[in-house]
Amino acid sequence: MIATGTPGEAAHARQIYVGWVTAGIELCQSVVTSFSDAEFAEPSRLPGWTRAHVIAHIDGNARGLGNLVTWARTGIETPMYTSMEQRDADIEAGALLAPQELRARFLQSSAQLADGFKSLREEDWSVQVRTAQGRMIASREVIWLRAREVMIHAVDLGGDVTFEDLPDDFLIALTDEVVARRGTLPDHPAIALRAGGHGWDISGEGAPALVDGTLPQIAAYVTGRSSREPALPGWL
Ligand code: ZN
Image (cartoon, rainbow, N blue to C red; front, side, top):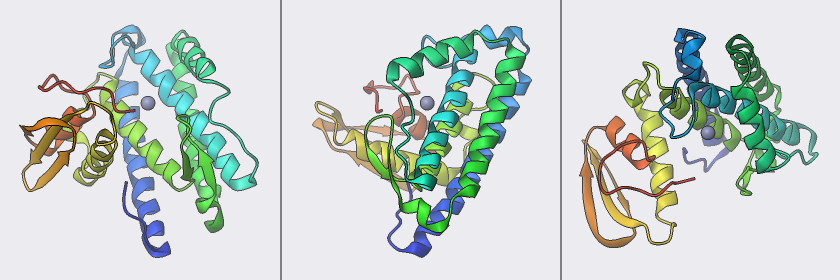
């Protein structure tokens, strides 16, 4: 995430997030439309999920975050999901849809969420809403959550898109956030990440292990999407 101390900075961050959402959706769309119907059933880059599962998840995420947009606009508490069981069941059901239908649902919910962001008034962006993990956030962060989802899952879909295709400023914001989060996890190994001129230190157990590489390689590693050592626990 980008620091948002003043209202001007907050508005600027929102613009950047919206740009990342648009770019991420375009990447997802290019991958999804490159798949034949049969390829929907092939494994994604996420363990245990087919490409159809990932698409159903991106679709469900748009609908869930859309509920938070409604919450911000109306002030009426509207949770992302009825329950985590329901969220998971929706992904399983979505993955069983005919590819044509799933593709259409994904395009529709992505566009609808983008319209939802446009519908918010200035004051709506500071309304506090709750994430699926139970964290209270300002609604402006919902755009960041969407950006994170569509960028990372564009890679997870298992098509041509890799971390190399994601913008550097996004990868830096992502790594900043994941490093901060990892520093709060119990029993996490201490790690020194280095990518060219950028460096991050994850506080944790033991002497810090040095992991260096390009920015895309470091972002892939820190989000648990690399086979490099030391192996990392999940971050969400
Ligand atoms: Zn996700």
